[in-house]
Length: 501
Image (cartoon, one colour):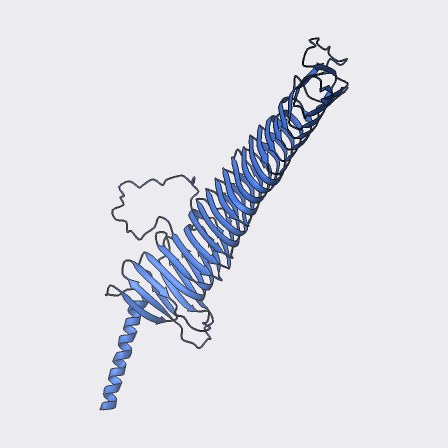
């Protein structure tokens, strides 16, 4: 009798346990909260707007489709494994389904298949995962378009937990993520690789020693990257980045790009949108922009710019700057041993250069204005030049108009074979200048003391001390109009002018 009673009680326990498992396995429970450890295989309908999955060592496949009923299933990847594996399910009716894999030593790989509608919210957290999320193909709309509300529909019946479009949050370690046609993604990835294709809406990336490839994104992007490599290709929308180490590349991007950089490599190619970068100890290469304003500032930057279709503003302390082919105005402030080389500027150029910097400028279509202090400057093929040099060395040729030149304690070597008009040169302190002019030419010299005429040496040009000789020069045999240069010299300054046919 005792044995029979014990057997009946055991059957009741088994029946009760099975009933509880069946209830929770279908994610339906009469209580407000149900929590249970469920053995695999597991297959159940999803009845809540939110699903949170915390798991390790698994392959997770998520399908977002308005045509598929929401469902969750899990099984062992290798059914031959004789090991019981269970998941902890936390169920809050009408709100949340939480699925968690308890920690264990050397857990076997499991396969999780999930189907969601496009108004459900999904979070996955874990390590050693292979995650694939596929959404429906979205209708192409302008990124700033606001969907019109359907007639008669109000927000009163909307649940606060639901998102507009699929809202995906992934926090992954040592994992691989692939997404396609997904909207609204927040990813935190530590190591591992990530491939995001045809994404729409906001995209928030926090990469830590990871690699990410983003293709065809439409919407805003925020990127935080530590020792990671990220590539954005064919994107539309603003990108805001904070990059520390690693490589950040944007190719064929349409939208504004801003970034804060630290010891990183940045590559922007064929970007149409304003660019604003600040940083230190980094390399920046920009190739091809369309009517975009580019702003770069920082310390110890290596900057390489080419084929820019808009103005440039750069403030650089130490480092290097190379610019080739730019449409628009260039404004530079170069401090402390900057090496700069600028060529083919189709606009004005204004520069403040100091502290043992070395600058080469070639081919400026409009006016060039430079303030130089304790630095070296080489210029050629300029439409016009206005220069103020202090304690510097200047060489130049191919300057068609020298509108103003002031030098203090500096050395000048200028070949002005193409100059026109009436250039003016003021030499102060211990400045030394050698200037070559086309003939016919005249030098009007204004000296501090007329007796110090040995300060100025002229050959091939007419010398007119203090402008006392009012006689004009005739045009040259080829009809060239005379060049008249006016030079003002301090006591310690010297000038040599050579006229060449």
